[in-house]
Image (cartoon, rainbow, N blue to C red; front, side, top):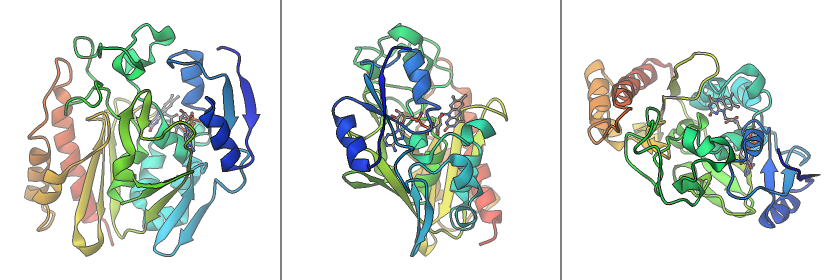
Length: 315
Ligand SMILES: Cc1cc2nc3c(=O)[nH]c(=O)nc-3n(C[C@H](O)[C@H](O)[C@H](O)COP(=O)(O)OP(=O)(O)OC[C@H]3O[C@@H](n4cnc5c(N)ncnc54)[C@H](O)[C@@H]3O)c2cc1C
């Protein structure tokens, strides 16, 4: 790890101004510290700005028909919160499936949605693979070991799969991400953006996430291990107002994907047959790389399983 200056920010403005001058913010540090130790970033930050000292950013509050969750709320606290369990069950379940209890007690919701991708070429120490996310001209995963990569093609030259567990739940629930200077629907927040996995610009900080209350929502995850592991595929479904169903999947594209074909397949109701059709239709345009064909079968089954669980849930 190289030397850097560490500052504690006391306001969002102070954090944001210093981040705009080339600093990087740290929340729980469970992702950022690994990237600093391995020196994977194209430019090593000389200033790390701690958000933990900003008062009130960890609150979880009711705000009319929504919950307002501070970006510094720990995943363990979001998972255990009674309001989240009652009104946004998919988010509670997603937070509960991230990594391990120790990590969930450090890691924050803001850090989870801003975490960098987990591609092993991107993450190889000392920039041994100067891939497209770091400004290079190629993506080594195309020709290399792509068993955990995208099955729906490329985004900004990258085929790493999105790995944030909370993202599909937030999108399915229709959440809004509130930053230091704008509000963006979660559906538009996640995108390959240089080394970032979201649309944040330099100096922009996530302050809150607003999640509409929802009567029924569920989250499912398939990982190789049931203890600490990133998703191979994860999936969330939520019942929207007017009876529509939103289905969103992670681990299959560089950003979480809204599965509109699956949503259409169940618009007249979820049955064993329509849920299976939703899985088939959602994967109709999937295209395997040399090593990840198995993900298509898992994703198909995950869509069906998630929808059947949603149907079985009490409103
Ligand atoms: C062993 C291990 C297992 C893991 N397993 C999973 C898993 O199963 N599922 C999963 O989703 N993730 C997993 N993670 C990834 C990650 O640790 C978590 O997603 C965690 O939620 C990150 O939160 P944090 O508060 O620690 O973020 P940090 O490490 O502090 O920050 C992560 C990134 O987000 C930026 N950032 C943080 N907060 C903000 C903010 N408010 N505004 C703007 N930018 C911000 C930081 O600058 C940094 O780039 C795992 C990590 C490890 C080490």
